[in-house]
Amino acid sequence: MKTLTRMRIVGSITVIAAYFVVLHVNLLVGVVMNVIADTISIPYFVKTKSWDIVFMLGFLLAISFSKLLS
Image (cartoon, rainbow, N blue to C red):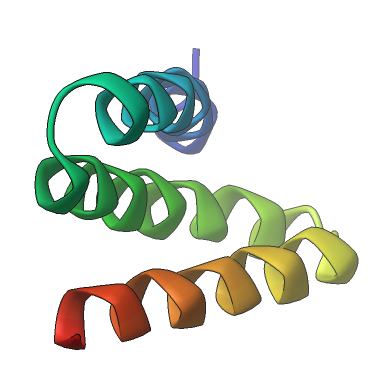
C-alpha cells in the first residue's frame, strides 16, 4: 500500500475519533486531532486531483484553526 493511501486511511479514522473526542472528552484535543487528520489527508486528494475534497478540507481546516485561536 502506498504512503499517501495510508495517510488518507489514518486521516479518515482520526477524523471520526476527533469528532468523538470533541463531543465526549475535550474540545481542544479534538480540534487538534481534526487539524492533524485533515492535514495528512490533503496530499492524497491533491495527487488524485480531487479538488472539491481539497477545497472542503481546506475550509474545515480554516474552521478548526479559528476554534484554536479563540
